Image 1 (tube, rainbow, N blue to C red):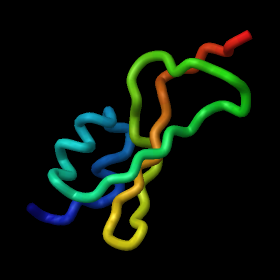
Image 2 (image 1 turned 180 degrees about the vertical axis):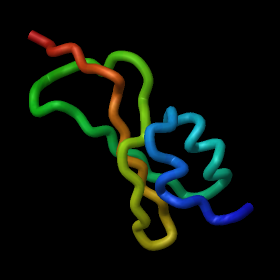
Image 3 (image 1 turned 135 degrees about the horizontal axis):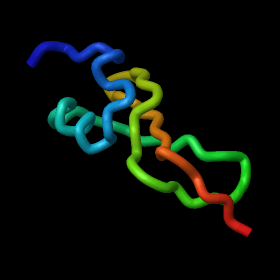
Length: 68
């Protein structure tokens, strides 16, 4: 499998990105608002970086609902 560039993974749904990465070591971070909230909709990849042998996917939901 050829090496994937970061641009191929950006904005993909998280599960599709995992499929494309095969069995590689992937770490997940979810970007959240600075207040208590629930994620609404799909989780998408918004940033990709390498950390040693691992790939770190920064993800975000389509929207967030603020909690009281």
